[in-house]
Length: 239
Ligand code: BTN
Image 1 (tube, rainbow, N blue to C red):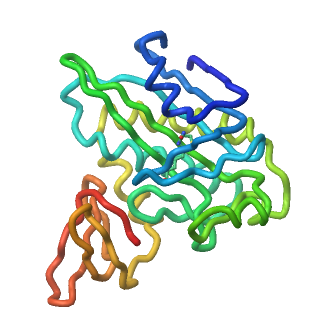
Image 2: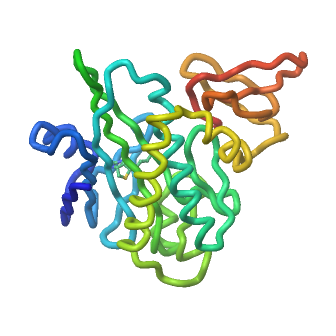
């Protein structure tokens, strides 16, 4: 894996999009930063990225133009992190589509961006993990959030978490390339947060209210509506 470690940058995803022409093709480039001044989240949200206490990384790679289920890549990254945390003895869950949570609070988010070309698609798969953020830093986040420090009471080495995540993700990506989302469906469904609870889910157009029921074979969300029918949300967010 090709590594680029930056001290401070606006956003590792923005940097990757600006510089991808110069990255070696045919392998993964992982861009990390100690600090981001304009970290971006999904739906144009800000990602709080203070110096040295978080993991801020963008994985860049290309896939064949016709690759299916690209939206699952962010879910696979979330699952890779969840596996790492499980190996550390924690009990993560995943709030659909790809927020990793501990004790119902968000510890990590994933932002997957793509650029399509005739022969290939470029993937910019960004992940942020709140590693050693303290309570004062977490207070700047506009939703219930936590960090590994707050959950475990000990400091973590950001580099170790990164290394473990890289190793797990490389494995998971290889598997995805061969087998698609199928082998990830069950592990993801087992970690699905809010199962059985009534949720509000925005699909970009409309808010659906229903019981968070299950995951489809390709990672979409099944909601059980009040009229007992299943509605599948392809892309969106649980509010
Ligand atoms: C979300 O939950 O909204 C997604 C957050 C993604 C944050 C990461 S941090 C590294 C990479 N660079 C960015 O600017 N964003 C992603």
